[in-house]
Each structure stands twice: as C-alpha cells, then as structure tokens.
Image (tube, rainbow, N blue to C red; front, side, top):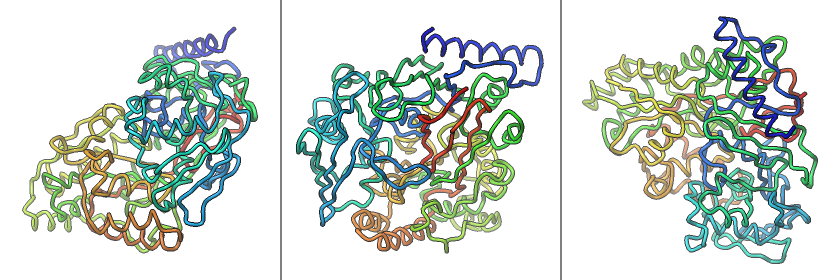
Length: 528
C-alpha cells in the first residue's frame, strides 16, 4: 500500500469518525478513529497560500515549508540562535559586508539535481533582481529581508559569497527564516509561476500531493543526507473553524493540532493527549489606519488603546495564555526590549476625554477580523470584545469577517479606502523584522512593505535604519528601545498581547516539541 493511499484512507477515516460522533450525538473520543501508524495528520488553521517559501508570509504556510526545504543556516533547537544548515560554515569580513559560505557536499534536491553555489545564487537573484528570468514567479513580499544584498557570487561549486551594500546585523537570522529556504532551480524553471504548487527542496520530507481545501501531503525523503525522518508521511489538513479542529482532535481524526483555542485546552489535559507550550517572539495587535479617517489623529489612536480592556481579553478570552503587550517589540527579545514601558491601562474615561478633545465622538469604524490565522487565537471572540469596548466609549464599530487568506489579501495591500482597523499577529525572528517591515514610511504597501496603516515618523525611520547597520548589540538595543517609546506614544497600533504558542498531540505521537521560532519541525517526530 502506498503512502498516498494510507494518507487518503486516514482522511476518510477522520471524516467518518467525526460524522459518526456528531450524528450519534456522542462526545467525541480518541477511540473512534485510528489513523495509520507512520502517517502523522496535522490540523492546520488554514489552506496554505503557496508552497514557494519566497512567495509567502504566513507561519501557517511556513510550518509546512520547513519540512520540505532547508536554508543555508537554521535556528538551533530551542533557541533563535543560528547554526549551520546547508552551509557547513561561514566567514564574515571585518567590515561586516561580505559573508562567505562553505556548502555541504553531496546534497541533492528531491528532483535529483545537485544543491550547489549556483543554486544558492539562483534563489537570491530570483528574489532580488527584477531582470532575472524567473523573477516573474513572485511576487516576493519578504524580499525586504535581503534588501542589503548587493550581489551573490559563485566562488566555486561549494562556496558562495554575499556582498552587502552596508553592514546588516540581522542577515544571518534572516537567512534562517523561511524566506531564506533554498528551492530547486530546475523545478522553478520547469514549473514557472506554478512552482508554488510543485515544491522541490532538499529537506527530510518531499512533496507528494496538494488537494485544495483538503490536504497537503509530504512523505519521507529516502535519499536525505541527514538523519531520516521519523514518520513515513505527514498530512496537513486545513480546518479553518477552531471548534471543528477541536472536535477532529477529540474524535481521533487528527494526531496533532496547532493553535488550540484557549477555552479548549482543558479538554486535552488528561489521559491520551499531550499539551505542548512554548513562549516566543509574538505580537498580537490592531493595525490602525493612520492615513485617513478617525485614526489619522494620534489622540484617537491613543483613545483606542485606553478603551480596550486588554487584561480582560488575556484572562477571559485567551484564558491566561498570553500577556498584555506594551509596544511593538516582544519581550522574548530580552536584550532589545524596553522593560520600562508600561502597557496602556484600561481607562475608558481617559478614552472618552481624548475622543472629545479630538472631536471624534461617534466616529464610525470598519474593523477587519479574520476567522483564524497565524498566531490568531480566538480572533472572532477577541474582535467582538474589542468592538464592545470601543463602542462603550463612543465609537461606532462595524466588523467585517474574512477567511485567513482572503483577510491577508484585504489587509496587506493597505487599509486605505477600505477599513479603519484590522487584527494582525506577527511571529518574528529579530527585533528588526516587524518594525522595519510594518512601521517605516518606506514600508507602505505601495512600496512593497506591510505598513498597512500608513504610519510615518521620520525619527522612527532613522532609528530603524541605524539599528540595522550597527555592529554592536548594545547600540542596537539602545536604538530599538528609543523606537519603542516613540511608537508606543504615537500608537499606530493597539498593542494587545504577546502570546505563548501551544499545540496538542495524541499519545501516539512522540518526540514533538515547539520552537521559539513558531515553526513546526516534524523531522524527528515518531507516530506509532
């Protein structure tokens, strides 16, 4: 029996068991279904947008990709520190502008073509050079990560050199991020714009099948140069509705689910399941449209921050699985985090005073909310609580709800002419990443960034530019802390929460851990 047949049978069994539990009015139990040994079935929060690592931005997609592809470097287990990946070693020039990587020998892509320096150059030239013959296989929304790369040079078959236009402190960290994963040039050449549906990497798993809105299946790579994967296949099932994911987990239709709704965690803290939690660099916030409408006024943005009872959201909606956020930088980056900043307190009277001062009482707001997405725990209940808080101080808030990928398609191009605010969450790899991509003036959507609320402050721009080229971590920390204080006062976002990620597995799953990166490395997982 082939792995794909096993995967398809497991999906049928999952659907049948869930239907049986529902139809008979039974409380679902893990004994209702038995997924096959060696096939791990993962309940995801949404359908992936693409399986091209250079073309996507969501952790939902990255969780699949890191099992198919590898980068030159990777995060060491349990940390955000960088260690060798497809590169065995590297050297950095004294001035911090040249990075020379020595590549592993004998590594092959899943299509049988060799991994070498030419492949590395192809990957970065495809993203960064508009005249590259396969640049049209984009767009590449996180190419910002490598904007400092002036050139990529093949020194020899197993040596590649990056020359930067100036020192760039987060360069190695960004190479470890999924945007830096290396794809097969031959597969891109063969599939063109359809490469994202036909992914080819060097990782411990290789792509097998993608059935839209049903499953992405990957299988063990028998020719992997490293330690063999612990399972024969992994099936990623998109189950958008959180309650449905929980029901599938309880009925035995899936072996693992990520982003468990906080209200459901107690159902899995018993025999037959394992709950896994891991803190990480996460920020859950509301983007405010600072270009037009009520939130173009800083006083109104500050009023929104005072109006929302974030403690209640953290304790009552998120069941204590998060902490109230104080600003744009997660406390997980301890060296760069400004501990002196206090979160905006819940002060509805202060919010009313600021609205009156701004002449914005009764302001009508359109609020974009997603049904579920990367790092978005219970986004609809959170959105509803936020709506109630804002209405209570004098706003008039209308919610529009979207499926995750549709939501990104509405929010990422910018809120101008569409909405006044939108939910958002980011999991980042470096203190530079989120503010540089989402708070700079040059990161407005029409310039390729994710500053969807069009916030602009030249002082913030200058601090961020200085921090990226600083060679001293102490200097970077000082600059980031200055930035945080300004941004908190300007309030381009409502700073809501820093979340602790979670997942649940059945007791048939072994060796699973969550990483601070919020990625999902399944190579060592065993499914009995």
